[in-house]
Length: 355
Image (cartoon, rainbow, N blue to C red; front, side):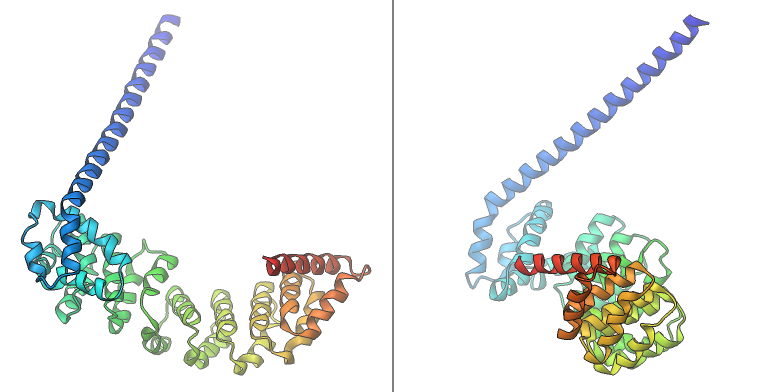
């Protein structure tokens, strides 16, 4: 019994040792591959860097440089170009873009955008954003219907770079069907576009049924401080009944700082859910409308701690009257909880102001 048990222990140790050796060898292999890739990249740069810089400050045709570089070295060229495309501006950037838009690389990227290899497709889609044509946009649209999240994300970012804002509804329709995409992930892609998408998204509010997409759209609006959507956001605020939509809509009101929203904020300051009262207080604090200052002062007596804290923060910056009342609370021993909250907020704000 004992010898058999010891045998199994030895077998288990042997297997664990072999697994450990395998992982050590695998890690070594990855490091070796990365080492040699880095060396090859450095070798490419040392050979071609001067020629690329000479091209930037010459009148040479872009194809004259590309013709010299073997296709086998393209991956090092692209890695090098990415860095400069990200950092250069003005004429230097335009000159560098010509290496993509006015050479054989243009067709090279068009051809590789449909390849099965994911790495090749992502690379091609990334560089296609510098070729601002209808053909490019149409090709990128086809790439939206891919099971790969990386390809989808790269495609959306390229469309955003091309300012293809007219495709925003299609992008959202496809994104909505992708179960693996979180709201934050979709939002980060949509915010690559500029404010041009806002009028189109405003129209979409009339028909959109998905709470997830509605939240994204409202967030886009307050990110761009797009006040023209105010009427429709107020409609959502009063008729949606969804807590998350109400809170995001209240945040929008605070960001656009439109005094036409004061009546709505007054209503939601008295909402039954403390999270919504907090959102309304924060919006009032940003707008700073003095007609609501008494409401904010009274919220220091709210039964919920989170509401008291939100009220104290708003009082500090809302008006001279509310700031004075906050200092009164800080010195009032009969209101111990409110006094502690007021003291803490005053101390925090002064530290931030000193920084």
